Length: 218
Image (tube, rainbow, N blue to C red):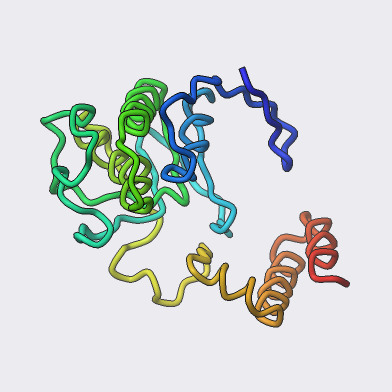
């Protein structure tokens, strides 16, 4: 087993070292799925560019950040993938993918089925240069297909058709991450907005504001 530590919570997580056949370039986020397989449900998988600003209620439903539309540019027909033998024929192509920047899994049965399907797909995929389509299929479209196939209910935090409408409960940086890498003033402005909100609304986490100051060179 390969061990790694969650740097925020000091949680030790062990990931099996059966990585043979998984191309790390094609499946750059595959480690999330391997880690999810090893952690007992109920569990939340959260990207570091997705911020939750309110307390959530958890039950027996999957919770994802939001749905995504199917399009050939990102979510092509299943026949596109050279790993078809590892896609269950009864999976629906019509179910909309789930954005898993936030992904709550309520039970181990679904978690094991989903991660098993995703890892089998990653291991069987023929190498190619179309990394994005393969990775988002393994992580996001398969999540929705597995939920549909097993009858596991889903709710989302955001409505896919209103993602850019004003709201204050969630922050998802998406492509803004690269803009912040390229322009330090944008990064500094964002960090200070986060710092101000923490101090105003969540004073119990004021110690994080000090960390933000250090990140911003203060």
